[in-house]
Image 1 (tube, rainbow, N blue to C red):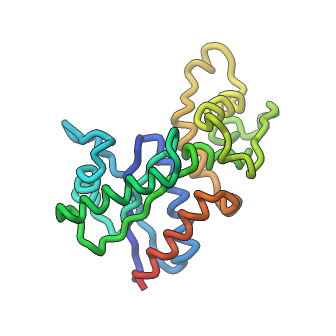
Image 2 (image 1 turned 180 degrees about the vertical axis):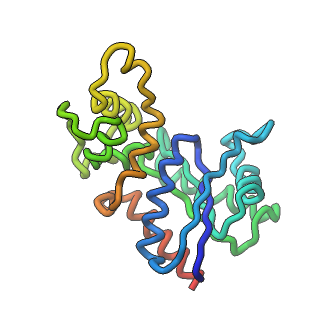
Length: 216
């Protein structure tokens, strides 16, 4: 195998930030394979299925963005990661039963303990660069890696940190697009190895390792 195409089906558009993380993990275990990535943007449809209808979202993702491997993201938020993974697995089985995908088509769930944004709160330089102020001096208190999965509102924390890192004020701060800045953070990180200390990240890497073993 010299090429692997994967598609990410996620809860929302901000979760496109997972793409560089997934690609990095795949490259760790498929070092001589070209990785091609797509985000399943179902917003292009006139009547996209609701987030709760995962089987139909799987069908459309595969139809619109053909791939060798599908990743399905859900934030745990108010549920446990185990419950979210169970929901994904049940939806995948429904998709198989309905012949939306074959019985052997590989699918990997991604469920951070709370939200994806917690996985982006570890690289201060990337946050400053994403905020457009790489030489900023504003003090930014990153949480410890051991506490990342316990942050109650990682999305709010990251957006505030980006605004603080920009060191903008007044009208310029109000015009600052923290959503766009957030998407730049993972593109500016070369090594996600520190996240291997997190249980959800460990599970994702284990699932990827087991799944790609079938491609050899």
